[in-house]
Length: 523
Image (cartoon, rainbow, N blue to C red; front, side):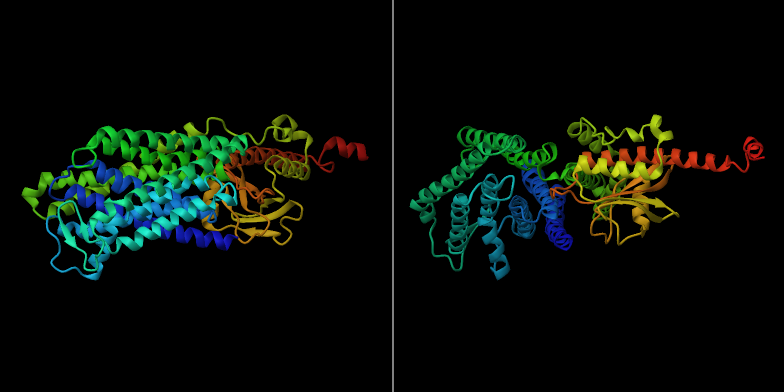
């Protein structure tokens, strides 16, 4: 399973990182190029924010749940946006006039430029079918996915034979084009529209049926996505009816509203996963909610500083002005990254973690008033049973420090650490534990992670040992609340262990052989 998840992480980020790189590059080129930017929504919204939002969130989901189709559908949308940006970067050389010779590469780019939108909208329409479990509510709903796949394949095949390829400024004949524009505008359009409506209606109906058969937690998740879907439908209808311009396109305001409603879909999925504990991916989605906006803000800052510096210094420095802008941007991004990250992280934590889980509640043995009545073995056994009952883990173990990075097995639950009587921590693991963080175990079949047992000494922490916990019997992962609660519990157990250690030292110093009264009694 770990090997499978590792492969999924590599694949997920191997797909997402190129999308991020191409999208940021396209935004920088658009903001710094000539002529001046006339549609910021197109560049910063559709071209940058949406590909980043879908691809990053998709990668985070796939990395932890590779079998869930919601993540893969979102990744297809992100890849489609990245591919569109790459096509635009290539076609920037042909902004006002078509290429003289249509090579195979340019033919493919123009083909995707004209029909690539199907790879964005059909996955978007199928998300309600698979949300939130990754499977349809029942096998009888699979026809919706098959219909959508059939329509996509039909368009992919027919699109290769359209008579002309079009951009906003010119039209060029397709060398293999035999299907005139009248075909698309005639009866085919009617059939296509009916099929599209059936796909959307079937997908939404499946979500409605799932809602009535779901538990309270899953219903909350579905409600968030339904809200985003309703907003999309309402705004899209209003935009199409009242805000389209004479050429059939959208005005700047309409384009902004349309973009925001599309952006609501990944935002709704992120909220469902994070706030309502969908798939127990709180830690993963915490990173998405922090680093998603952070990446966008950093990219925007980088691009704007380059544009501003280039404009102010182009007369004095000429072509060197862009290099100066890039250098200044890098310095500014480096300076503001950590403070901005802290602000976003604080906002996310306060918004989505209003209450902190107290795992120590119910384990009275870690309270100071009970320290004098306990021995080390009893404390460890009670703590392991408490963690097992609260978190549902089958295995747990205690390791006590015998050196800076060496830990000796002291107690275990259900033979959790039978094959690991002694463990050595890597430098990275030790640093993470010093930062009061749970770290993943390495090469331990029954134990998933190590919780630090520490005493806060101000600038540093004294690490007394580890509480190693296994996976949950239910198969679910640990949420962000769970990890924070475990660290807090580790601190309280660490204080109790330190009190027991100090009491043992006092008893040893007051042994009967060194006490005067005891010596008299012996006489």
